Structure formats: C-alpha cells, structure tokens
Length: 484
Image (cartoon, rainbow, N blue to C red):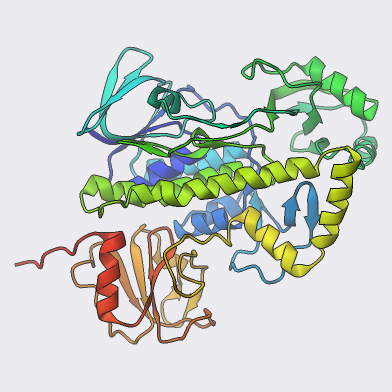
C-alpha cells in the first residue's frame, strides 16, 4: 500500500511530496497533465517562502536562476520602499517564473525519492478506516493510507469528497498571457504608464526572448470559466484601454482570472485532506497564491508523516485545518480589500490615495508587508511571549552556524540556551538537541530554550525540564521506550 497519494503536481503537491519524503513516507504524486504547461501564473516567492526554501536547503537553486526584489506593501497596486524592521533574515522576495519553481521543486522531490506519475487523473475515491481507494480515469485503482488533494481551484478531490466551497463569485475578470509585440518598447512603456493612472489591472511587461507578459481587464465575466480567451480578445481590450494593441502576436499561452474568493469549509475529511488552491481560491493580487499553497504543504507535511509513522499525538493532524484555515481566510479578506482599492470609480480611487499615504508610515508599511509575505504569522499556542507560535527567523548561533542550516532534515529542534540542562531522552529520534546561544537578541531572556516544530514555529519557551516534558507530547507524541 502507498502511504500517501498526492493529487496534483504543482508547487503545493511537489512541496508536500518532498516534505513527506524527508520522513521516509512512500508518496506518489498523480498529475493529470502529461507535461508542464509552461504557463507562469505565479511570479515568485515572498520572504516566508524564501525562508522555507532555506530551511530545506534549496534556496541556492532559486537564487541561481532568479532576481531578488524588495518591494514593501505590494498591496492593491501600491508599492513602497521595503520596511526597515521586518522580522526576517531574508528581507526580500525572489522573482521566479512558476515553471522554474515547479522544475526546482520537482527535482527536489525526486531526489528525496518521491514517485511522480504524469498523465494520471483522479476519477473517484472511497475511504474507510484503513485507507483510501483512488480510481483513475484509465480504469485502474490505487490504494493509500492518505490522500491529499493539491489539484487546483477546480479540485476533483474536493468535489468527490463533497466538501462545500462557499464564497463570492467573480465580479471582474482579467486577461493574462505571454506573447510577442511589434510596438516600440518605449511607446509601450509610455502607454502603460498613462493607463495605470486610472487602471492598475493593466500591464505589458517585457520577459525574455522578445516576449511580453500582458495583463488587461476583460470585457466582462465569462460564464464558462474553463473557456480560454483568444488573441483577438486581447487585441480588442488593449485597444479599448491603450488605443493600440501594440502589434501583439504569436502567443505562448493565454489565460484569464477573476476575483472570486472561495474556501473549503474543512481541510480534512477522514483520511483525505486539501491544500493549496484546492482549499482556497482568490485573486492573485499581492502574489500570494503560490506562496500560500507551499506554506500549506510545509505545515501539513510533518504532521501527516507523523500520522503515517504512528506516533502522531491525538489531534495533531487536525491542527492543520485549525492553523491553516484562518490563514487562508485572512488571505481571501486581504485580496478582496486589494480588489476594492484597485477600482476605477472615485470612491476606490480616493481610498487608494489615502491608503498610499498611510503606507508612508513605517509601522503601517511593516504591517502590510508582513501580511503579504506571511512573516508576521503567529499560530495560537496559548499564552506566552510574543515569539511563541511564530516561526523562528534564521539566526546565527555562536558555535553551530546558521539555525536554518540545522533544519534541513525536517525534524524538530530544541535550541537549548540553558547550557545543556535540558534533556530530550525518549524524543531524540524526532528532535535535534542543539546546545548553543545566539549572537542577537530574540526578545526573551538569553537563558530560555526554544522548542521548534519541523516547520520552524516556536512551540515552547522555557528552562524547566518538567515543563518541557509536559509540552513535548503535544507536538511529538509519546516518548520512545529506552533501548534494552
């Protein structure tokens, strides 16, 4: 029997497969497409996703083929200088086309031993107490202990489960594609600048090899959401907004997106879970979609691996929904706000002007940037210092080097700053014990230790062995019996 089947081979599914393989889980990724489309809807990684890639040792692969960017806010088309005091050792994003992101994550998952089957589409599923039976379009079936639907906004897995997907339908639609242009680049830039005075959902952005990424409002919201636009539609809308179609031709791909916002009522139904766009859809304003899905996978992977291994404490797998559903809901809310700010009527225009002035304040800019990049995210682990529940930023240790370099294997980590007075006896197979101190102030007394989950979030802060023993089972299950 397969341990976990992942339906969907996009960034979310590939990241999840890699996370599971870190714990020797047998995972099979089913991707219905025989080959990648080459479409680049997601354009890069925000700071928290940069941290994730660093924690798993693959950030260098992204930096080798990407450019760093620093744009504060990035909210509703409003950009500001990067805030000075954002809590991260990686104060930047990386501009990486989605096909490149998928290639890197594909290679990462394969290197760890994941099995990826292309041209395999899920057609049905049934589950019982022991596992899930997955039926494929070709008539074959597979059996696994768990199934995770990472198969996009029109998720087959979610529909087969019967999980409700409430939300708001699209009210506006935007055309998006890559194509060649014949117009002079300077003339295009001048035209785009003029249109952007009133319409922010418009752009002709040079890519490589003479290709431009074209973004333009559609004439209306199409009833058939699966129908792709034509080149002629792009030409008509470019002429309507800019007075010229810029001689667009030879499209690489054409697509569209709306401002619909929907979220699955539950991320888990028995042995089947949902992640990425299968669990939530929203407009791409702020560039959060790909990042949100990757971070879903980062949260879920170690918990699902613990369930497969049999040591997951009761309720651990349910914390995936408890932690990530509110995060998804918050992204839906902020994208709705951004769409409102990007309106062309006098009210939204006045509101955008006011919001832009507010973002000139460092504190507001830091808050909005932290919101978009997810570095200010804090899970509710109960009362305690502000650091409790937050992900730990990368810090330089006095003896062991960088903290993130010690988290490559996806295990928990006890950063013992008590001088070694704490013990992980019974849990050393699941948690690394690092006795060291940091060069920088963490906002808590230097004598307190920190227990980090495999996803880097601080699960406990203290110096008491008794208190540590009381918290370890919450995240890492019962202690292993001593070896005879």
